[in-house]
Length: 213
Length: 210
Image (cartoon, rainbow over all chains, first blue to last red):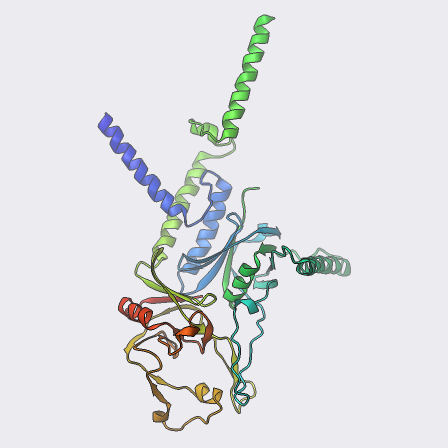
């Protein structure tokens, strides 16, 4: 009897080890929460389609508060999200393609001048930018403006401008404001620039919605 | 009266104990007390099985052999097998600068390292650089007509790994520039790292660049 119990406990521990290893694919997953599991399986179904092709894609994980740069299911880079807010997230149900990457000011080589041009680096990348997708999704990336009142004011100004535009649209058309999902992400300055560097035109994005309050 | 008071008192203590156990995070032994009443165990099981199946499917897409990973923002090249880092080397990648094509008002070269997934297509020893048009134009020189005038040995190091469209991982004459975005799109390494990479990488080894 004791022998059987020992074998059973070994088998159970092996099963839990394999479960734990697989759980890492979706971090911070509550496996007894049906809503969390439903969302995780939805994301996994989409991710399998993306990972089957030779491409890099982005998974915005609102539950684990992280932006993951991935390829073939492997996490290449991890950018933590400090805070986020969203609207119409319930409509998110697919992969989104980035329409265009944030603008980069590139230096031009002048052969006549002969002077060496400074190459672009992470520091040249924008610290706040908006990403537009197909099907419609808007992601506003803002960097943490700690200790920089000017940046804080500019970011707030932009956020208010977007709201004002939405209200203006409603008043002008007399209808409902545009109901496509939008996401505001606040990350550190370095991570905002990293994301701006990494994204490319046509890059697929997935969003895992948070299921815990 | 005394009995009523006692039963009320014991009920209150019981309630207090249950609250304490729940708030302390001590696991409750009976599984049915962990799950809220609204959760359908059959649905939960189905979801767990589905999740596990999908996780397995995604895991099967992950590279099992060693692969090369290039981080162009931080200028690092890694050789990885699963999560294990087998090599971490300082590299130089594309400068992102642009050069106008002469006689073509709209045409220009953009010196970016391409992003995405590639494979090692060729492994060369003592490679000779065949200088493209931009290399002459950038220096204000005329593009030669003869192919022989384009050949420049010794500038790419001892080895080169080609990954398509003229892009290579190769050596450098300027190791002080490693860690910076200074190239025309190729990926440069120092001699030792290049040698290790050449030994580890085969034709077909995946290269992921982001």
